[in-house]
Length: 296
Ligand SMILES: Nc1nc2c(ncn2[C@@H]2O[C@H](COP(=O)(O)OP(=O)(O)OP(=O)(O)O)[C@@H](O)[C@H]2O)c(=O)[nH]1
Ligand SMILES: [Mg+2]
Ligand SMILES: [Zn+2]
Image (cartoon, protein in one colour):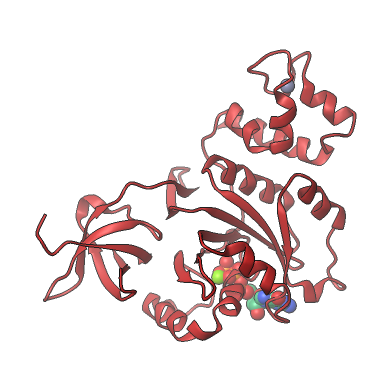
C-alpha cells in the first residue's frame, strides 16, 4: 500500500460512494475499489486521498459484527457494521409490532450486541395506548425499556445515558420517529444532518441509508432506514432458541439437548409455558419463527 493510506470510518454510503470520516473528524467523499463493494456504515477502513476526484477506500478492517437484512431475493444485505447495541424503536403510532420486536431481539443476541427497547411518541399515549403488560414482560426478561417523546423532548436523558460510549443503531418500522430522535439527541448538529441528507439528494424525509452520528455526551448512533417488516434470514433452530432469553434459560433442562421445544417429550420449555413462567405470547412467536425456518 502507498504511504498515504489513512484510517477512517464509514459514516454513510450511497451506491458506490461513501463518506469516510478521518481521525480528525473530517469527512471525505470516497469510492471503493471494485473488490470492496460491501463496505457499509460503521466499517473501519483504510483510504487514500486523491487530488483529482473521490478518495479511494482500499481496505476494510475486520468487523466485530454486521447487521444484515434479507434483500428481495432473500440474500443477506449488510446494513451496518461494528455495532455494540441494537436499539429497537417502536411507537404509540404506528402501533407496535411486538413479533417483529422479538425478531430484532433474537438478531441482537446473535450479532452479538446488547438490545435496548425504545417506545417513542409518548405524547400519543392517551389516544393510542399500548399494552403496558408487555413493557413489563420485557423488563422482567432483563431488557431496558425507555419511553420517550421526540416531540415533547421527554425521556431523552435516559436515552442519552443508555447510548453512552458505544456504537448503537436505531432499527424499527418506518415512521416510528428514529430520525426525529436523532435530531433531538443532536440539536447542535442539525447542519451536519442537513448536509448529509442533501448529499443523498433524494428529496424525501424518510431515511434511505444508514448514517452514523456522534452523540454530544459520548457514543455513536446510527440511523437506519425503517422497515415494513424484519425477518431473521438464515438461522438454525438452536440459534433461534438462544435468541429467546426465556426459552434459552429453560431449554437447558429439556430431556434432549437438541430439543426444538416443539414436539419433543420432556421439554422444559413447554412445561414452563404451561406453568406460566414463560409467556404464551413469547412462545407463540418462537414457534411461528421456527415454522418459518422449516419452510425456507
Ligand atoms: N406525535 C409524535 N410524532 C412524532 C414523534 N417523533 C416523530 N414523530 C413524527 O413521526 C413521523 C416519522 O418520523 P421520522 O423521524 O421520519 O421516522 P423514522 O422512524 O425515521 O422513519 P423512516 O426513516 O421511514 O424509518 C414524522 O411525521 C414525525 O414528526 C413524537 O415523539 N410524537
Ligand atoms: Mg428516518
Ligand atoms: Zn425443549
